[in-house]
Image 1 (tube, chains in turn purple, blue):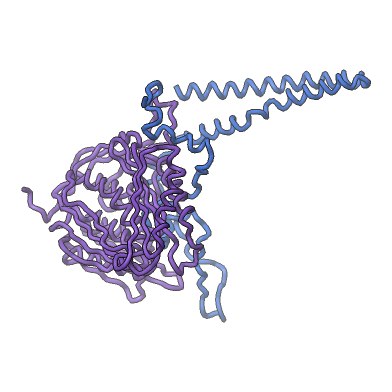
Image 2 (spheres, each protein chain N blue to C red):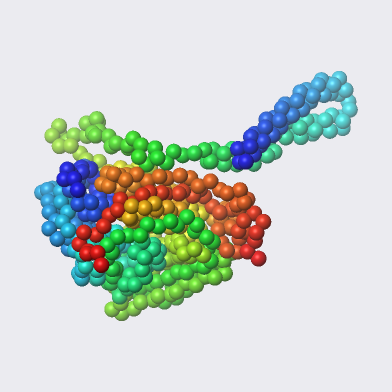
Length: 376
Length: 164
Protein backbone atom coordinates (compact mmCIF):
# COMPACT_ATOMS: atom_id res chain seq x y z
CA UNK A 1 0.00 0.00 0.00
CA UNK A 2 1.29 3.42 -0.80
CA UNK A 3 2.01 5.71 2.09
CA UNK A 4 1.28 9.09 0.57
CA UNK A 5 -1.84 10.62 2.01
CA UNK A 6 -4.95 11.77 0.21
CA UNK A 7 -6.22 15.28 0.78
CA UNK A 8 -9.83 16.40 0.75
CA UNK A 9 -11.84 19.42 1.75
CA UNK A 10 -15.12 19.75 3.60
CA UNK A 11 -17.33 17.48 5.62
CA UNK A 12 -19.41 16.16 2.73
CA UNK A 13 -18.83 12.46 1.93
CA UNK A 14 -17.05 12.16 5.28
CA UNK A 15 -17.90 8.50 5.81
CA UNK A 16 -16.91 7.46 2.27
CA UNK A 17 -13.43 8.85 2.76
CA UNK A 18 -12.86 7.30 6.15
CA UNK A 19 -14.27 3.91 5.12
CA UNK A 20 -12.12 3.75 2.00
CA UNK A 21 -9.09 4.93 3.97
CA UNK A 22 -9.62 2.15 6.50
CA UNK A 23 -9.97 -0.49 3.79
CA UNK A 24 -7.08 0.69 1.65
CA UNK A 25 -4.79 1.52 4.58
CA UNK A 26 -4.07 4.97 3.19
CA UNK A 27 -3.83 8.09 5.30
CA UNK A 28 -6.43 10.73 4.65
CA UNK A 29 -6.38 14.44 5.48
CA UNK A 30 -9.55 16.49 5.46
CA UNK A 31 -9.36 20.28 5.65
CA UNK A 32 -11.83 23.16 5.74
CA UNK A 33 -14.53 21.26 7.59
CA UNK A 34 -17.31 23.84 7.87
CA UNK A 35 -14.56 26.44 8.12
CA UNK A 36 -16.84 29.29 7.01
CA UNK A 37 -19.88 28.52 9.08
CA UNK A 38 -21.00 30.07 12.32
CA UNK A 39 -20.44 26.76 14.01
CA UNK A 40 -17.17 25.57 12.49
CA UNK A 41 -15.52 22.20 12.64
CA UNK A 42 -16.68 18.66 13.17
CA UNK A 43 -20.09 18.11 14.69
CA UNK A 44 -20.89 15.73 17.51
CA UNK A 45 -22.17 12.99 15.23
CA UNK A 46 -18.95 13.06 13.22
CA UNK A 47 -16.93 12.82 16.41
CA UNK A 48 -19.14 9.89 17.35
CA UNK A 49 -18.38 8.32 13.98
CA UNK A 50 -14.65 8.73 14.51
CA UNK A 51 -14.98 7.03 17.89
CA UNK A 52 -16.80 4.18 16.18
CA UNK A 53 -13.91 3.75 13.74
CA UNK A 54 -11.54 3.79 16.66
CA UNK A 55 -13.44 0.92 18.29
CA UNK A 56 -13.51 -1.04 15.06
CA UNK A 57 -9.78 -0.72 14.42
CA UNK A 58 -6.58 -1.20 16.31
CA UNK A 59 -3.70 1.25 16.06
CA UNK A 60 -5.47 4.05 14.23
CA UNK A 61 -4.07 7.53 14.57
CA UNK A 62 -6.66 10.28 14.58
CA UNK A 63 -5.71 13.93 14.95
CA UNK A 64 -8.32 16.67 15.01
CA UNK A 65 -7.17 20.29 15.01
CA UNK A 66 -8.17 22.60 17.84
CA UNK A 67 -10.94 24.25 15.86
CA UNK A 68 -12.13 20.92 14.53
CA UNK A 69 -11.80 22.06 10.92
CA UNK A 70 -8.88 19.75 10.06
CA UNK A 71 -8.68 16.00 10.46
CA UNK A 72 -5.90 13.50 9.94
CA UNK A 73 -6.76 9.82 9.89
CA UNK A 74 -4.12 7.12 9.69
CA UNK A 75 -5.97 3.81 9.73
CA UNK A 76 -4.95 0.78 11.73
CA UNK A 77 -6.02 -2.82 11.40
CA UNK A 78 -9.69 -3.76 11.31
CA UNK A 79 -10.56 -5.77 14.40
CA UNK A 80 -14.31 -5.87 14.81
CA UNK A 81 -15.60 -8.33 17.38
CA UNK A 82 -18.14 -7.59 20.10
CA UNK A 83 -18.68 -3.97 20.91
CA UNK A 84 -21.22 -1.38 21.91
CA UNK A 85 -21.54 2.12 20.56
CA UNK A 86 -23.54 5.13 21.60
CA UNK A 87 -24.59 6.69 18.30
CA UNK A 88 -25.03 10.42 18.53
CA UNK A 89 -28.74 11.27 18.16
CA UNK A 90 -28.04 14.05 15.62
CA UNK A 91 -27.99 11.28 13.02
CA UNK A 92 -29.77 7.96 13.09
CA UNK A 93 -28.16 4.56 13.65
CA UNK A 94 -28.38 4.02 9.89
CA UNK A 95 -25.62 6.59 9.37
CA UNK A 96 -23.27 4.51 11.51
CA UNK A 97 -24.59 1.12 10.47
CA UNK A 98 -23.94 1.77 6.78
CA UNK A 99 -20.27 2.25 7.56
CA UNK A 100 -20.13 -0.84 9.78
CA UNK A 101 -21.70 -2.93 7.01
CA UNK A 102 -19.11 -1.68 4.51
CA UNK A 103 -16.30 -2.76 6.83
CA UNK A 104 -17.88 -5.86 8.42
CA UNK A 105 -16.73 -8.52 5.90
CA UNK A 106 -13.06 -7.57 6.39
CA UNK A 107 -12.68 -7.56 10.16
CA UNK A 108 -10.51 -9.97 12.13
CA UNK A 109 -13.36 -11.22 14.32
CA UNK A 110 -17.02 -11.45 13.30
CA UNK A 111 -18.89 -8.30 14.25
CA UNK A 112 -21.51 -8.28 16.95
CA UNK A 113 -22.40 -4.66 17.50
CA UNK A 114 -24.90 -3.17 19.89
CA UNK A 115 -25.80 0.30 18.69
CA UNK A 116 -27.84 2.76 20.71
CA UNK A 117 -29.47 5.93 19.45
CA UNK A 118 -32.10 7.01 16.95
CA UNK A 119 -33.37 4.03 14.96
CA UNK A 120 -35.63 5.95 12.58
CA UNK A 121 -35.33 9.49 11.27
CA UNK A 122 -36.03 11.42 8.09
CA UNK A 123 -32.52 11.81 6.75
CA UNK A 124 -30.67 8.52 6.89
CA UNK A 125 -31.78 5.03 5.87
CA UNK A 126 -33.57 3.58 8.87
CA UNK A 127 -32.62 0.27 10.45
CA UNK A 128 -35.75 -1.25 8.88
CA UNK A 129 -34.71 -0.26 5.37
CA UNK A 130 -31.17 -1.53 5.93
CA UNK A 131 -32.50 -4.82 7.28
CA UNK A 132 -34.86 -5.30 4.35
CA UNK A 133 -32.73 -4.10 1.43
CA UNK A 134 -29.03 -3.84 2.36
CA UNK A 135 -28.72 -7.19 4.14
CA UNK A 136 -29.95 -9.24 1.15
CA UNK A 137 -27.31 -7.49 -0.99
CA UNK A 138 -24.63 -8.12 1.61
CA UNK A 139 -25.60 -11.80 1.79
CA UNK A 140 -25.08 -12.17 -1.95
CA UNK A 141 -21.51 -10.91 -1.69
CA UNK A 142 -20.73 -12.95 1.40
CA UNK A 143 -22.19 -16.07 -0.19
CA UNK A 144 -23.99 -17.02 3.00
CA UNK A 145 -27.14 -16.29 4.95
CA UNK A 146 -25.76 -17.41 8.24
CA UNK A 147 -25.15 -14.93 10.99
CA UNK A 148 -26.15 -11.85 9.01
CA UNK A 149 -28.86 -10.16 11.02
CA UNK A 150 -30.21 -6.92 12.45
CA UNK A 151 -32.36 -7.20 15.53
CA UNK A 152 -34.27 -4.15 16.67
CA UNK A 153 -34.45 -4.47 20.45
CA UNK A 154 -35.85 -1.01 21.09
CA UNK A 155 -37.12 1.67 18.79
CA UNK A 156 -36.09 5.28 19.22
CA UNK A 157 -37.51 8.06 17.10
CA UNK A 158 -35.74 11.37 16.45
CA UNK A 159 -34.76 13.63 18.18
CA UNK A 160 -34.01 11.87 21.47
CA UNK A 161 -33.57 8.30 20.31
CA UNK A 162 -33.26 5.70 23.00
CA UNK A 163 -33.39 2.81 20.56
CA UNK A 164 -31.17 -0.24 20.48
CA UNK A 165 -30.13 -2.44 17.58
CA UNK A 166 -28.03 -5.59 17.44
CA UNK A 167 -26.09 -6.16 14.24
CA UNK A 168 -24.21 -9.36 13.53
CA UNK A 169 -22.12 -10.24 10.49
CA UNK A 170 -19.52 -12.92 9.78
CA UNK A 171 -16.18 -11.94 8.25
CA UNK A 172 -14.76 -13.33 5.03
CA UNK A 173 -11.38 -13.86 3.48
CA UNK A 174 -12.65 -12.80 0.09
CA UNK A 175 -15.88 -11.53 -1.40
CA UNK A 176 -17.62 -13.24 -4.27
CA UNK A 177 -17.80 -11.50 -7.62
CA UNK A 178 -21.41 -10.98 -8.61
CA UNK A 179 -23.17 -10.84 -11.93
CA UNK A 180 -26.69 -9.64 -11.38
CA UNK A 181 -28.10 -8.15 -14.55
CA UNK A 182 -31.65 -9.48 -14.67
CA UNK A 183 -33.80 -8.01 -11.87
CA UNK A 184 -36.92 -9.89 -12.97
CA UNK A 185 -40.44 -8.73 -12.21
CA UNK A 186 -41.78 -7.47 -8.93
CA UNK A 187 -43.73 -10.26 -7.30
CA UNK A 188 -44.61 -8.84 -3.92
CA UNK A 189 -44.45 -5.83 -1.68
CA UNK A 190 -43.65 -6.11 1.99
CA UNK A 191 -43.29 -3.45 4.60
CA UNK A 192 -43.23 -2.36 8.19
CA UNK A 193 -45.42 0.32 9.69
CA UNK A 194 -44.06 1.29 13.07
CA UNK A 195 -45.25 3.59 15.79
CA UNK A 196 -43.74 4.46 19.14
CA UNK A 197 -45.38 6.48 21.88
CA UNK A 198 -48.39 7.30 19.70
CA UNK A 199 -51.78 5.66 19.22
CA UNK A 200 -51.58 2.12 17.76
CA UNK A 201 -54.25 3.12 15.22
CA UNK A 202 -51.62 5.22 13.45
CA UNK A 203 -49.99 2.11 11.96
CA UNK A 204 -53.23 0.95 10.35
CA UNK A 205 -53.93 4.40 8.96
CA UNK A 206 -50.54 4.37 7.24
CA UNK A 207 -51.04 0.83 5.91
CA UNK A 208 -54.48 1.61 4.47
CA UNK A 209 -53.40 4.73 2.64
CA UNK A 210 -50.28 3.06 1.20
CA UNK A 211 -52.37 0.12 0.06
CA UNK A 212 -54.87 2.42 -1.65
CA UNK A 213 -52.12 3.37 -4.10
CA UNK A 214 -50.19 0.11 -4.41
CA UNK A 215 -53.17 -2.22 -4.84
CA UNK A 216 -53.59 -0.94 -8.41
CA UNK A 217 -50.27 -2.55 -9.32
CA UNK A 218 -50.09 -5.70 -7.28
CA UNK A 219 -52.26 -7.70 -4.93
CA UNK A 220 -49.54 -9.48 -2.96
CA UNK A 221 -48.93 -6.76 -0.40
CA UNK A 222 -48.35 -7.38 3.25
CA UNK A 223 -47.34 -4.64 5.64
CA UNK A 224 -46.46 -5.65 9.17
CA UNK A 225 -47.50 -3.32 11.94
CA UNK A 226 -45.10 -2.77 14.78
CA UNK A 227 -46.48 -0.72 17.62
CA UNK A 228 -44.00 -0.56 20.48
CA UNK A 229 -44.69 0.63 23.98
CA UNK A 230 -43.11 0.91 27.39
CA UNK A 231 -39.38 0.44 27.65
CA UNK A 232 -39.14 -0.61 23.98
CA UNK A 233 -40.44 2.65 22.59
CA UNK A 234 -37.52 5.01 23.19
CA UNK A 235 -37.65 8.60 24.32
CA UNK A 236 -39.54 10.40 21.54
CA UNK A 237 -42.88 9.84 19.86
CA UNK A 238 -42.86 9.01 16.17
CA UNK A 239 -44.12 6.75 13.44
CA UNK A 240 -43.09 5.73 9.96
CA UNK A 241 -43.44 3.32 7.10
CA UNK A 242 -40.89 1.26 5.19
CA UNK A 243 -41.92 -0.47 1.95
CA UNK A 244 -39.90 -2.99 -0.04
CA UNK A 245 -40.68 -4.41 -3.48
CA UNK A 246 -39.23 -7.86 -4.07
CA UNK A 247 -38.61 -9.22 -7.56
CA UNK A 248 -38.68 -12.76 -8.92
CA UNK A 249 -34.86 -12.80 -9.11
CA UNK A 250 -34.30 -11.53 -5.60
CA UNK A 251 -33.75 -7.81 -6.01
CA UNK A 252 -35.09 -5.55 -3.29
CA UNK A 253 -36.18 -1.97 -3.89
CA UNK A 254 -37.08 0.05 -0.84
CA UNK A 255 -38.63 3.37 0.10
CA UNK A 256 -39.55 4.90 3.39
CA UNK A 257 -40.81 7.89 5.30
CA UNK A 258 -40.71 8.83 8.94
CA UNK A 259 -42.75 11.38 10.84
CA UNK A 260 -41.19 14.78 11.44
CA UNK A 261 -39.32 14.96 14.71
CA UNK A 262 -40.76 16.70 17.73
CA UNK A 263 -39.36 20.22 18.02
CA UNK A 264 -37.88 20.20 14.50
CA UNK A 265 -40.16 23.04 13.39
CA UNK A 266 -41.59 21.01 10.53
CA UNK A 267 -45.29 20.51 10.06
CA UNK A 268 -46.55 17.56 12.11
CA UNK A 269 -46.95 14.48 9.92
CA UNK A 270 -50.34 12.98 9.14
CA UNK A 271 -50.33 9.15 8.93
CA UNK A 272 -52.50 9.06 5.78
CA UNK A 273 -50.27 11.51 3.91
CA UNK A 274 -47.16 9.73 5.08
CA UNK A 275 -48.50 6.39 3.84
CA UNK A 276 -49.31 7.83 0.43
CA UNK A 277 -45.97 9.61 0.14
CA UNK A 278 -44.13 6.41 0.96
CA UNK A 279 -46.09 4.46 -1.64
CA UNK A 280 -45.26 7.13 -4.23
CA UNK A 281 -41.61 7.01 -3.24
CA UNK A 282 -41.67 3.27 -3.80
CA UNK A 283 -43.18 3.75 -7.27
CA UNK A 284 -40.45 6.26 -8.02
CA UNK A 285 -37.87 3.71 -6.92
CA UNK A 286 -39.51 1.05 -9.11
CA UNK A 287 -39.39 3.50 -12.03
CA UNK A 288 -35.64 3.87 -11.49
CA UNK A 289 -35.44 0.11 -11.20
CA UNK A 290 -32.33 -2.05 -11.33
CA UNK A 291 -31.08 -4.86 -9.12
CA UNK A 292 -30.39 -2.58 -6.15
CA UNK A 293 -32.19 0.59 -5.14
CA UNK A 294 -30.74 4.08 -4.93
CA UNK A 295 -29.77 3.79 -1.27
CA UNK A 296 -27.71 0.64 -1.81
CA UNK A 297 -25.89 1.63 -5.00
CA UNK A 298 -22.75 2.78 -3.21
CA UNK A 299 -22.42 -0.23 -0.91
CA UNK A 300 -22.87 -2.51 -3.89
CA UNK A 301 -20.23 -0.63 -5.87
CA UNK A 302 -17.80 -0.97 -2.95
CA UNK A 303 -18.28 -4.73 -2.65
CA UNK A 304 -17.94 -5.14 -6.42
CA UNK A 305 -14.67 -3.20 -6.35
CA UNK A 306 -13.30 -5.24 -3.46
CA UNK A 307 -14.20 -8.60 -4.99
CA UNK A 308 -11.81 -11.16 -6.38
CA UNK A 309 -9.99 -10.40 -9.61
CA UNK A 310 -12.97 -11.32 -11.67
CA UNK A 311 -15.67 -9.43 -13.53
CA UNK A 312 -18.63 -8.16 -11.54
CA UNK A 313 -21.71 -6.84 -13.26
CA UNK A 314 -24.74 -5.14 -11.80
CA UNK A 315 -27.78 -3.55 -13.37
CA UNK A 316 -28.84 -0.35 -11.63
CA UNK A 317 -31.13 2.61 -12.13
CA UNK A 318 -29.89 6.17 -12.62
CA UNK A 319 -26.80 6.95 -10.54
CA UNK A 320 -27.34 9.10 -7.47
CA UNK A 321 -24.95 11.99 -6.72
CA UNK A 322 -23.72 10.09 -3.67
CA UNK A 323 -22.82 7.06 -5.80
CA UNK A 324 -21.09 9.19 -8.42
CA UNK A 325 -18.88 10.68 -5.73
CA UNK A 326 -18.30 7.22 -4.29
CA UNK A 327 -17.09 5.92 -7.65
CA UNK A 328 -14.67 8.85 -7.81
CA UNK A 329 -13.40 8.04 -4.36
CA UNK A 330 -12.93 4.38 -5.24
CA UNK A 331 -10.72 5.57 -8.07
CA UNK A 332 -8.71 7.75 -5.66
CA UNK A 333 -8.14 5.00 -3.14
CA UNK A 334 -7.98 1.83 -5.24
CA UNK A 335 -7.19 3.16 -8.75
CA UNK A 336 -10.20 1.28 -10.01
CA UNK A 337 -12.53 2.65 -12.66
CA UNK A 338 -15.99 1.32 -13.26
CA UNK A 339 -17.48 0.91 -16.69
CA UNK A 340 -20.92 2.49 -16.76
CA UNK A 341 -23.08 1.97 -19.83
CA UNK A 342 -26.72 2.59 -20.54
CA UNK A 343 -28.44 -0.71 -21.28
CA UNK A 344 -30.02 -0.95 -24.73
CA UNK A 345 -33.54 -2.32 -24.63
CA UNK A 346 -33.82 -5.64 -26.49
CA UNK A 347 -36.21 -5.59 -29.43
CA UNK A 348 -38.75 -7.98 -27.94
CA UNK A 349 -39.10 -5.72 -24.93
CA UNK A 350 -39.28 -2.44 -26.82
CA UNK A 351 -43.00 -2.10 -26.32
CA UNK A 352 -42.87 -2.71 -22.59
CA UNK A 353 -43.26 -0.01 -19.99
CA UNK A 354 -40.52 -0.70 -17.50
CA UNK A 355 -39.66 2.75 -16.23
CA UNK A 356 -36.50 4.79 -16.65
CA UNK A 357 -33.16 4.09 -18.23
CA UNK A 358 -31.06 1.34 -16.67
CA UNK A 359 -27.29 1.30 -16.39
CA UNK A 360 -24.86 -1.57 -16.39
CA UNK A 361 -22.10 -1.19 -13.84
CA UNK A 362 -19.09 -3.34 -14.65
CA UNK A 363 -15.72 -3.70 -12.97
CA UNK A 364 -12.92 -6.14 -12.30
CA UNK A 365 -12.38 -6.51 -8.57
CA UNK A 366 -9.07 -5.43 -7.07
CA UNK A 367 -8.66 -8.84 -5.44
CA UNK A 368 -8.92 -7.44 -1.94
CA UNK A 369 -8.37 -10.04 0.75
CA UNK A 370 -8.82 -9.91 4.46
CA UNK A 371 -5.31 -9.76 5.90
CA UNK A 372 -6.41 -10.75 9.39
CA UNK A 373 -8.23 -13.89 8.36
CA UNK A 374 -6.23 -17.03 7.66
CA UNK A 375 -7.12 -19.13 4.65
CA UNK A 376 -8.91 -22.21 5.87
CA UNK B 1 -34.26 -0.22 -35.66
CA UNK B 2 -34.83 2.57 -33.18
CA UNK B 3 -32.84 5.01 -35.25
CA UNK B 4 -34.79 4.19 -38.38
CA UNK B 5 -38.02 4.66 -36.44
CA UNK B 6 -36.91 8.04 -35.21
CA UNK B 7 -35.92 9.05 -38.72
CA UNK B 8 -39.30 8.01 -40.01
CA UNK B 9 -41.13 10.02 -37.41
CA UNK B 10 -38.96 13.03 -38.18
CA UNK B 11 -39.69 12.70 -41.90
CA UNK B 12 -43.35 12.48 -41.05
CA UNK B 13 -43.22 15.68 -39.09
CA UNK B 14 -41.42 17.48 -41.92
CA UNK B 15 -44.00 16.26 -44.42
CA UNK B 16 -46.83 17.43 -42.24
CA UNK B 17 -45.30 20.84 -41.95
CA UNK B 18 -45.03 21.10 -45.71
CA UNK B 19 -48.62 20.02 -46.04
CA UNK B 20 -49.89 22.60 -43.65
CA UNK B 21 -47.95 25.42 -45.26
CA UNK B 22 -49.30 24.35 -48.64
CA UNK B 23 -52.78 24.39 -47.18
CA UNK B 24 -52.53 27.92 -45.85
CA UNK B 25 -51.35 29.17 -49.24
CA UNK B 26 -54.45 27.88 -50.90
CA UNK B 27 -56.45 29.52 -48.12
CA UNK B 28 -54.99 32.88 -49.02
CA UNK B 29 -56.34 32.45 -52.51
CA UNK B 30 -59.74 31.70 -51.05
CA UNK B 31 -59.61 34.88 -49.03
CA UNK B 32 -59.16 36.99 -52.15
CA UNK B 33 -62.22 35.36 -53.62
CA UNK B 34 -64.18 36.07 -50.47
CA UNK B 35 -63.52 39.75 -50.71
CA UNK B 36 -65.23 39.77 -54.08
CA UNK B 37 -68.35 37.94 -52.89
CA UNK B 38 -69.12 39.82 -49.71
CA UNK B 39 -72.86 39.04 -49.58
CA UNK B 40 -72.56 35.29 -49.44
CA UNK B 41 -72.01 35.20 -45.73
CA UNK B 42 -72.77 31.56 -45.05
CA UNK B 43 -70.29 30.45 -47.58
CA UNK B 44 -67.74 32.83 -46.14
CA UNK B 45 -68.12 31.35 -42.68
CA UNK B 46 -67.63 27.87 -44.01
CA UNK B 47 -64.45 28.86 -45.72
CA UNK B 48 -63.18 30.62 -42.64
CA UNK B 49 -63.84 27.54 -40.53
CA UNK B 50 -62.07 25.41 -43.03
CA UNK B 51 -59.20 27.82 -43.03
CA UNK B 52 -58.84 27.56 -39.29
CA UNK B 53 -59.10 23.81 -39.50
CA UNK B 54 -56.35 23.61 -42.06
CA UNK B 55 -54.15 26.42 -40.86
CA UNK B 56 -54.10 25.19 -37.28
CA UNK B 57 -53.80 21.54 -38.09
CA UNK B 58 -50.09 21.61 -37.29
CA UNK B 59 -51.06 22.60 -33.77
CA UNK B 60 -53.26 19.60 -33.16
CA UNK B 61 -50.58 17.05 -32.23
CA UNK B 62 -48.14 19.45 -30.64
CA UNK B 63 -48.17 17.54 -27.38
CA UNK B 64 -47.33 14.29 -29.11
CA UNK B 65 -44.57 15.93 -31.11
CA UNK B 66 -43.12 17.54 -28.01
CA UNK B 67 -43.23 14.20 -26.22
CA UNK B 68 -41.49 12.48 -29.12
CA UNK B 69 -38.73 15.06 -29.33
CA UNK B 70 -38.33 15.00 -25.55
CA UNK B 71 -37.91 11.25 -25.62
CA UNK B 72 -35.39 11.53 -28.43
CA UNK B 73 -33.41 14.06 -26.48
CA UNK B 74 -33.56 11.94 -23.35
CA UNK B 75 -32.21 9.02 -25.31
CA UNK B 76 -29.24 11.11 -26.38
CA UNK B 77 -26.35 9.35 -24.74
CA UNK B 78 -24.92 10.72 -21.55
CA UNK B 79 -21.23 10.03 -21.41
CA UNK B 80 -21.10 8.40 -18.00
CA UNK B 81 -17.36 8.03 -18.01
CA UNK B 82 -17.02 11.77 -18.42
CA UNK B 83 -19.78 12.44 -15.92
CA UNK B 84 -18.08 10.40 -13.22
CA UNK B 85 -14.38 10.62 -13.94
CA UNK B 86 -14.24 13.84 -15.94
CA UNK B 87 -13.08 17.24 -14.77
CA UNK B 88 -14.38 18.37 -11.42
CA UNK B 89 -17.22 20.76 -11.88
CA UNK B 90 -18.15 22.58 -8.74
CA UNK B 91 -15.03 24.06 -7.28
CA UNK B 92 -16.27 26.34 -4.51
CA UNK B 93 -15.66 30.01 -4.96
CA UNK B 94 -13.02 31.03 -2.53
CA UNK B 95 -14.03 34.37 -1.11
CA UNK B 96 -16.88 36.80 -1.42
CA UNK B 97 -15.52 40.01 -2.83
CA UNK B 98 -18.20 42.11 -1.13
CA UNK B 99 -16.91 43.83 1.94
CA UNK B 100 -19.10 42.38 4.65
CA UNK B 101 -16.97 43.94 7.30
CA UNK B 102 -17.97 45.38 10.61
CA UNK B 103 -15.94 48.45 11.44
CA UNK B 104 -13.30 47.31 8.95
CA UNK B 105 -12.21 44.71 11.45
CA UNK B 106 -14.51 41.73 11.64
CA UNK B 107 -15.80 39.80 8.73
CA UNK B 108 -19.46 38.90 8.89
CA UNK B 109 -20.06 35.31 7.89
CA UNK B 110 -23.24 34.77 6.01
CA UNK B 111 -25.53 32.09 7.28
CA UNK B 112 -25.30 29.29 4.76
CA UNK B 113 -28.43 29.19 2.68
CA UNK B 114 -29.71 25.95 1.30
CA UNK B 115 -31.43 27.55 -1.66
CA UNK B 116 -29.47 25.99 -4.47
CA UNK B 117 -30.43 22.36 -4.71
CA UNK B 118 -27.87 21.32 -7.26
CA UNK B 119 -24.88 21.48 -5.00
CA UNK B 120 -24.94 18.00 -3.53
CA UNK B 121 -21.24 17.93 -4.40
CA UNK B 122 -20.33 21.12 -2.57
CA UNK B 123 -17.84 20.47 0.15
CA UNK B 124 -19.81 21.06 3.31
CA UNK B 125 -23.18 19.52 2.50
CA UNK B 126 -24.83 16.81 4.57
CA UNK B 127 -23.25 13.42 4.06
CA UNK B 128 -26.22 11.18 3.30
CA UNK B 129 -26.59 8.10 1.12
CA UNK B 130 -30.33 8.33 0.75
CA UNK B 131 -31.53 9.83 -2.50
CA UNK B 132 -34.34 12.36 -2.50
CA UNK B 133 -35.57 12.87 -6.06
CA UNK B 134 -35.65 16.55 -6.98
CA UNK B 135 -38.55 16.37 -9.38
CA UNK B 136 -40.68 13.41 -8.38
CA UNK B 137 -43.25 12.40 -10.94
CA UNK B 138 -46.95 12.82 -10.34
CA UNK B 139 -48.02 9.28 -9.57
CA UNK B 140 -51.70 10.18 -9.53
CA UNK B 141 -51.62 10.51 -13.34
CA UNK B 142 -52.65 7.57 -15.44
CA UNK B 143 -49.78 8.01 -17.95
CA UNK B 144 -47.18 8.04 -15.24
CA UNK B 145 -48.42 4.90 -13.53
CA UNK B 146 -48.63 3.22 -16.94
CA UNK B 147 -44.91 3.79 -17.42
CA UNK B 148 -44.02 1.12 -14.87
CA UNK B 149 -46.86 -1.32 -15.34
CA UNK B 150 -44.62 -3.99 -16.90
CA UNK B 151 -42.22 -3.98 -13.96
CA UNK B 152 -44.68 -6.21 -12.13
CA UNK B 153 -45.35 -9.90 -12.66
CA UNK B 154 -48.89 -8.99 -13.67
CA UNK B 155 -47.54 -6.96 -16.59
CA UNK B 156 -46.30 -8.10 -19.97
CA UNK B 157 -43.06 -10.09 -20.03
CA UNK B 158 -42.05 -9.76 -23.65
CA UNK B 159 -43.69 -8.34 -26.73
CA UNK B 160 -45.96 -11.30 -27.35
CA UNK B 161 -45.62 -13.28 -24.17
CA UNK B 162 -47.90 -12.50 -21.28
CA UNK B 163 -47.99 -13.58 -17.66
CA UNK B 164 -51.27 -15.33 -18.38
